[in-house]
Image 1 (tube, helix red, strand yellow):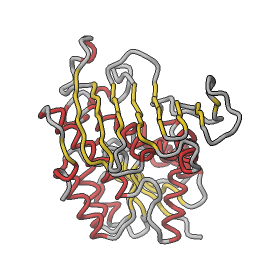
Image 2 (cartoon, rainbow, N blue to C red):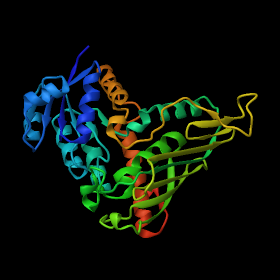
Image 3 (cartoon, one colour):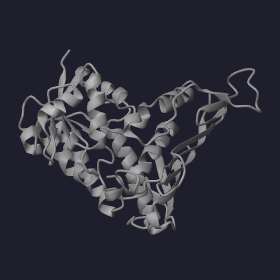
Image 4 (cartoon, rainbow, N blue to C red):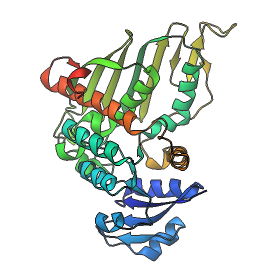
Amino acid sequence: MKKYNVAVLGYGWAAGAHIGAINAGSLAQVTAVVSARPIDAAELSGKHGSSIRVFRKLQDVLADPAIDVVDITSYPWEHAEQVIAVARAGKHIICEKPFVLSLEDLRRVESEVKASGVQFCLCFECRWSSHFLAVKSVIDEGLLGKLHYGEVDYYHGIGPWYGQYRWNVTKKGGGSSLLSAGCHALDALLLCMGGDVEEVTSYDTKSANPIFQRYEYPTTSVTILKFSGGAVGKCASVVDCFQPYYFHTHLVGSEGSLLDNKFHSQRIVGLEKSRWSELSLKLVDSGDVGDHPYQAQFDAFFEALSQGKAMPLTSLDAALRTHEVIFAADRSAETGCPVKLQDVRP
């Protein structure tokens, strides 16, 4: 089976985790890194266990026929143009979230990637976590019945103690609370609820603590979603809190409910209604990229490439759907009015 050669664009915190996950699999290897900073190729190769060339310019990597995939781990405001350049060069794409910061760029990227015919994987890796693989299995097995309410919330204080704070505080860098980080929770909610979003209403606010005053946008938002079929949902994105990282998950259906790693189901005879049953799973409970389930996601991507199939769970279409909801939510918070998804779709 072909082993894909991967070039990583940008060499920062996320890149290190990506390289480790790619090289740990059997279908791909990182053979190039593009970085504006001077990096010693021998030292880099020794650190990551594969022979890695170092490039200073993306164009040089795109001209190299040996490179099959470009993994984009650069700054968010660079993603749109880089995705377009990679797609035009005919290389397959892995991209860290968010892959665009505006609705206009979303449409440009959609057009270019689809026209190129390359495969695409967005790093909404929570879909590949033990947490949400198990939750989705509980839903698919019918243990909760038909879902009519769901909430998935993101609580993670991103202050000076956190690496991305220095650029995340800017509108250019972070975009919004949802784009910056809460997108993981919103994406997980869409995965769980299944139906299409028809309308959103969102409100935002900001902590009074001086640490968070550098942010150029509201750092807390709450979004209410109306799904086709009548279900409703809620997603809070809070990056200005002082508390342990928490990825709150609560789903309510016609036959049961799920709360984080606990559930109750009418479909299982003999369960006590006064007590939760516990699922044995690893919760999404850290913002550390070293804890993210990249290997499972990347293994699935390279397996899909080898079979000529689209990426499961985190394909371009899934990325477009989640980002459309994000931009609708941010528009609602800005205008103070509900926004229908048809108004942000072509």
